[in-house]
Image 1 (cartoon, each protein chain N blue to C red):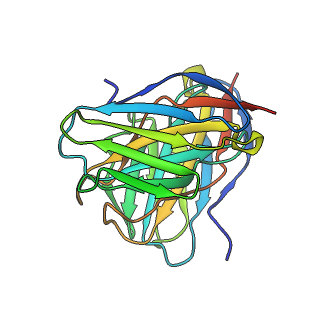
Image 2: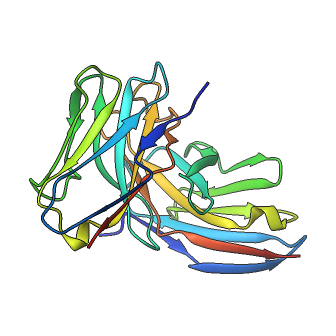
Length: 115
Length: 113
């Protein structure tokens, strides 16, 4: 009964580099969400998947951000040409289905620092 | 534009006291209002949630009060304990088709022994 896991827990990179952040959802959860949490703020929605498809990517800030979920389980958030403003904790959550009342279970997050 | 507004930013309460955190929203399409608790270095964890068809929900020491006409809801923590010290986020979610959560900016609660 493992929860949502995210790797790495911390990632330090240099401005302009490419990074990948991984999320392993709870087994059997079909919906997967990515959020970004800046220091002192609440999580901010980026994208969610139902199965393999991105059902809503309206929260992605620009085209440097991309996420995939090729087999409907593990998801990878990809950030190209990182900028200092991308520094934040990236949270992944999963839920059993997409109904409004389905609880979202969050992982511990990946803290990204762009130098 | 902040979809859910939360106050206060920080709160200090004596052990045994009542902690109250308030939130307000504008979008009447929201139909699910959860509260999350977050400890340092951890992801948010669901604490308690309410639907707009009820005015109050209680689970142990935690109570949500919901005022649909005012578009406001609040979290009350009774008999606050040092272990309750954490950051609390209110959130709101729309109907199926808009499933992301909109979070408030958080309240850092400190319960003094």
